Length: 321
Image 1: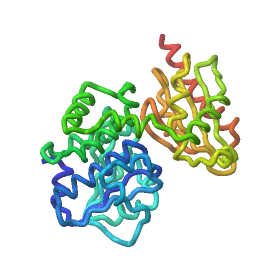
Image 2: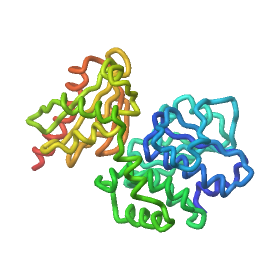
Image 3: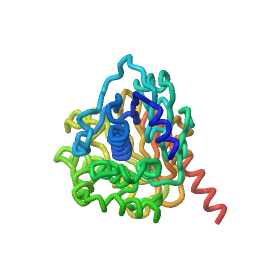
């Protein structure tokens, strides 16, 4: 019996949390945990709480049960998934603080170990992969497998990222054996975009700028652009990944304005740059090849500050060679 299952057995009430603006791995992991807990603890009070979750994951079992507002309840157990620090839980961090016991399941190298128990595998492709190892195979049905598969697909870029291992593929294969429609999951949640999402993507790519001899690239979406196209931050998913695939680019940066001179930063790298180190320096976090943070200043200031750290890493590699 894993630590997670042991703690689950001892709890009469459970709350499941993920980070604000949850991505596919966070959504898949949280809803997989929700279904698993409901099956294992029939009759227990099980809640899942997330903020600003995307509609494109509405096909996942339990999506319609997600709570968006924190209350005054307390729980025996708080399970945090795909969240590297307590601040990213947002208003739901109150449940972590008041729970009798807590456990965090994650794969971020920047995880701060904030829960009572922490199961963090920094080398794993996704939190969904780590969570799979904490669950009993006999309780993983088709609906639960859809959730876990969604998490793995999104954090591996459909098995393209370097974090994908033979173990990742083996787990994905076992999930496919439950009868999930894996093609539809990938098409509908990863590739499909609305007309407005395609428009803002085109605008962002059209205005991207290369620098550092073409090794780096950035683009920005301002508040006025979002208003003009009628999009929200949820519609900006995937822009930075398109930048990363441009020939010759080692590091891609995507900014979008969240307030006056305040930007949400997403970074991706291909082979050399550890963007998690850069994001952590500016108060963010993430993975070696995918990370983010929030920064203030002009666009020029933000890009200059980031490029200084990127350049140091590139120079260090060149000196080593």
